[in-house]
Structures are given as structure tokens and as C-alpha cells.
Image (cartoon, rainbow, N blue to C red; front, side):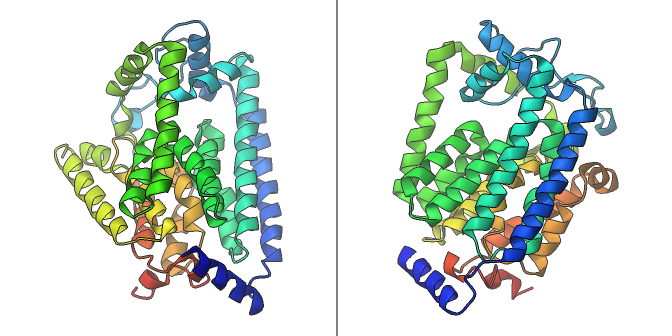
Length: 388
């Protein structure tokens, strides 16, 4: 399969289609400048509140306290617009393997923590986008701009989440696998799943699709990263994490587009788990029939991690972004990307979950319909969009 891809890439070069897209780098520069202006404006006007949860988590870990507890600096979410409480303690829900990162950065004053964190996210987004532009000469200008200026990217910069890191790991996995570095790709996948356990569908689907060595190596990385927090902080750290997860209230927010919380908001709580299980099973079966298609299987797995878990923010689409732009967009892909460019406040105010839910469903259908090997990426999701 890899030889086929390499042969097609050489054919592209001989035909004059493999010389890259110089205008794409111009669009990249414009996107970086625009994102930099937004980031600078955010740093000049924001307070430290959005970063209080991670900072207090790291401080608690340094002091031997419960990193998943509620502290004075813990961010409080206002869910009144969605029928929830006005001041819900938004405690850290990230797995224990990320605690050393928070612990290290919490040695900074809270204000400096916010600055470093925001600049770090900006650098991760811009570097990953550059990596994808460099690795894919056929990338479209609109795809380049979308990678840097879509609503999930702006939302992560604004809200101080870890998704810039996950975006980078997904992009690294795509590039490394594309260049035959499967061991390094497995390491990137293992890190991503360790940091976001709901993405465990990724190695599972890869295994089902026949990428068993890649999946096995990823699982080895996950096992190591799951074990060391118990050594650093004691086995009780997992009980503290599970207790925080048990009391989570994020299901009320429409930005959480997973099926289980979606049906809970519709007052049909028993339907959500069944629907999620059916979708996960269908995607696993589809992955079984996608042997050799790393992009399609990875995209479906990441989408399964969004739709079929108890928590799936629309921002998680960033992990699928490298696979979503791996081929040129057809009309349906462009429509989904356009929906994901709508600012969060506007999208939620206009239609609750439906705009981003529709966008993510479109992204998923593109992976489900993708039957071409990566060598055919210049035709872009052709097997599905030609039917539309």
C-alpha cells in the first residue's frame, strides 16, 4: 500500500501537480498573522480566570493535595443559559498523566501561567499547520486558513484548553505515518489517547482494520503513561479522578455534541447510550472493511471518540483536522468546514448544538465514504461526494 502511495506521489510530480502550492504558504502567513493579532488582543484584555483550574490543579499536585478538588482559583462555569447552575466548579477532568505538566507550570504566578499557556497553544497551532502544509503539496488555500482560523482554534486560545497539544499529536501521527515512521506515529497516537482517553477508539479501530503492530505499540505507550501517575502520586490519584468525573455536569452545555449528553438534554437519557453503542459498532465494522486506509480509519475513530463518549466537545474536531484536510474538499466538506468557522457564541445562540453537530456529522460521513487510498487525495473524498 505504501509503495502504491509513493508511486502515485511520484506520478503527481511528473505530471506537474506535485510542485506544491506557493499561494498556500501566503495563506498560511495571513492566517498566522490573524491568529497572532487575536492571541495578542486576548492576552491584553483577559484576566487569569480561564487558567485557574489548571493552575490550582498543578499547585495541589505539588502540595500533595487532591488535584481534582475545588480551590479558590478553580474556574466557575455559568450554566444558567442551559438550565444549569450559575456557578459550577469546573474542576480539572484531564487524566493523571497530565498532572506533571500542570505541576511544572504552576510554579509560575497565575498571570504568567496564562500567558505561557496561551503562547504555547498559539505555537502548537501554527507549527502543526505549517507541518501539514509542508507535508501535503496539494493542500487547498481554504484548508490552510481553516486550520488556523476555525472556531475550534479560536475557542481553544480563548478558553485555555489542552487541545493545541492534541492537535499537534494528531498532525504528527499523520505526517509520521505518511513517511513510513510507524513507530513514531504509534508513539504520537499513544500520547494523544493517554491525554484524551475517550479517543481509545483510535488504536481499537486500527487493530480491527489490520494495523495491529501500530495499534499494539500505541497501547504499550498508553499502558506506560497510565501506570506512572500511580508511582508519582499514589494509586489514590485514580480514585480522585474518577470521583471528579462522576460529578461532572458538562452534559448541559450544547457545545458538548456527544450523543449521550445530547439525548440527556432532550430528556431521553436511555436512548443516548444505545445510539452511541450502535454508532460505535457500525463504525468499527466499517473500519474492518477499510483495511489499508489509515486516514479513513483514524478519522472514523476520532469521530467515534467525539460522538460515542459521555463528553465530546466540538473542539475535539481538531484531532480529526489533519485527516480532514488530507484530501481536497468537495462541496459537502466545504459546507462542514464553513459551519465549523462560525463563532461559538453565534452558533450556540442561533441553534444550540445543531450547527456544530451537523458539521461534525458531515466530517464523519467523509471518512465513512472514503475508500480511495491516500494516493488519490487530489480527488478528495471522491467516493462519497460524487454520490451527493
